[in-house]
Image 1 (cartoon, rainbow, N blue to C red):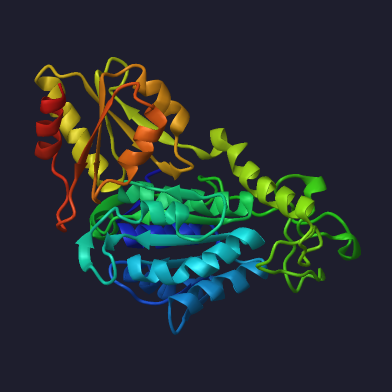
Image 2: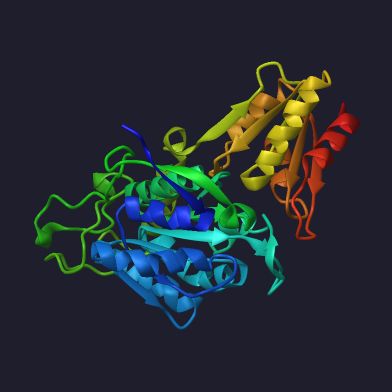
Length: 377
């Protein structure tokens, strides 16, 4: 049977991926270059019984999806640099209160208003450390429109499984480019829902560590009454300053992701088996890198591509292994050198690490990658 196909922007693909995953609430605020996500959701959500709301600002948008998620809905918001800055306090609230939600960030240049219509990859450290305190982070960096669809579905699954916010990072270019997409049939991609409590309402503890690192989450309005706060709390959800409970809560939240790295991490490796130099690139720039690797191979240079699809948690074990194989690594990125610092941290001097950066609103080209690799080799 022939697949249903569509010509979609990356932003549109993200919205349709969210709908496929069961998203039924979108709270947002228009901002370039992410607005098409909201536009699709505004049209499509009412058709499936969902709700769309445009809030007064990005803070309100983030607050709205957290409230909707606590009623049991799968939720989405989308934004870009300045809007993401505004969302940080409530992203932190979602972390400590363990509220499932998905956030699409179509990155653009900054700081401040920056270059609203130009591409960037400068929010990757914001995605990891933008909100204060110790907290786990999951961030996905798809490269193609097809992958944007499927990774948005996976983002919802991860948010539901691990009770936390998950970010999908696009970079304006893949947010606005159009590509042919094969739309999966219902049931073709796995769609997961959060675990519900199995105990009576009077016995329910929303943050009970005795049932595992990810306690089941009841829905408001379903007969379960419980307390949600941004403070450190006891298993019943009410605030506490008891040192042993605060320490246990913080460590449990980090452990639930660290212990699941093998299930969360996802990477693509291309021509790395015999590579002497590895390009580590993500998102749109990984497409330039793949072209460069193919051209370098034709010239006798053994180059390969390592492409993180899950950027956070960072695939440090595999990168460390790769550093023992190759002579050098090149990290091209549309910022002034953020991911390269993470690579250097993991490599620990096992091979040389070079940086290639660009922040002028234009993508890094294959020729730029090839020229720098020739210098390394």
